[in-house]
Amino acid sequence: MARNLARILRGCGSLVPFMKTPARPPRSSSSSIPVRTLVEMLPSLFSSKPRDFSLPNSSWGEEMMRLYEHYNGHTETEGEENQERKWNRLPSYNRSLKYAAGGVYLSKLIQSKARLFTRNIRDPGAAFEYVLFIDKEKEKCVCIFQAGHLLEGPPGHVHGGAIATMIDTVTGTHASAISAPVLTANLNIDYRSPIPLGSTVLIESTLEKTEGRKLFISCKVTSTDGSKRHTDATALFVSVSIGHLLKG
Ligand SMILES: CCCCCCCCCC(=O)SCCNC(=O)CCNC(=O)[C@H](O)C(C)(C)COP(=O)(O)OP(=O)(O)OC[C@H]1O[C@@H](n2cnc3c(N)ncnc32)[C@H](O)[C@@H]1OP(=O)(O)O
Image (cartoon, rainbow, N blue to C red; front, top):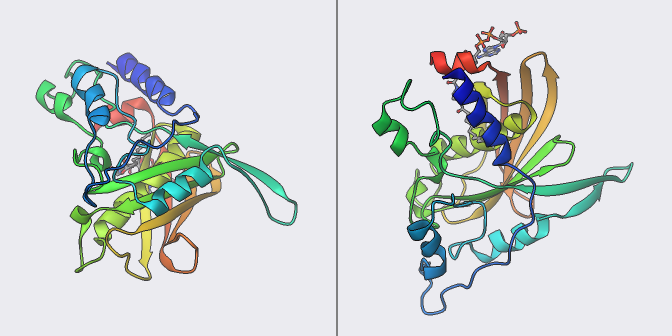
């Protein structure tokens, strides 16, 4: 069982190769409501190839697309030392336990239906639309997040739990890229200004330090032009053994 899970986790590593992405698919012109194109639907109907959810779909708005094209494979120079930072897209799939240990620690029913929380809505644009980029040194991650109408908390704004979910996802993906498998041990969030539903924001995470099995990561959510600070967070991840995951 542990050997099987080890194989899966190695497989997860292959789920995050750095890759360039194809051009944006056509958008519907007849309506502002996103339409799932036949091209998008066909692979899921006829192929077992997993869908990469971090590629553009017809629900992505102009700001999401502009930033996607900005970061995808982009190199920027920053700081006084003109340090170069190259951003690489991280693919994102909705299931990781598909090939797990034959229901040894999960019932087969649960295992076959298990889906990554943020990637389980079929209607594109309805909930979490996001794409993550990581720099080559794995010091920073940036996520472009478009918050769909199903994520409402206060009227017209994003639910605090949905924001926490995205912060956990971005910092957790960042920590996993450095040292998989990890679990969130601690997450502190300051909500500074509400995020309008339907808007696109930037979620940036920074590796502050590592101490043994512990990874300390900070995170901020801002408007895409950086003028508005929506949320600040710090997170602690702890590297765990496969045995710890199996123990539950
Ligand atoms: C690629 C796809 C990626 C998708 C991204 C999704 C990311 C989602 C991530 C999650 O949501 S994980 C789910 C939520 N988290 C959990 O369910 C974790 C539950 N907690 C545990 O399993 C254990 O408490 C934990 C693994 C975190 C730690 O247990 P251990 O027995 O492995 O470690 P230990 O308790 O010995 O602590 C190790 C170190 O961490 C420190 N530590 C642990 N918990 C802490 C805490 N809460 N606050 C501060 N420090 C803490 C602890 O003091 C110690 O420090 P030192 O090494 O310096 O002594």
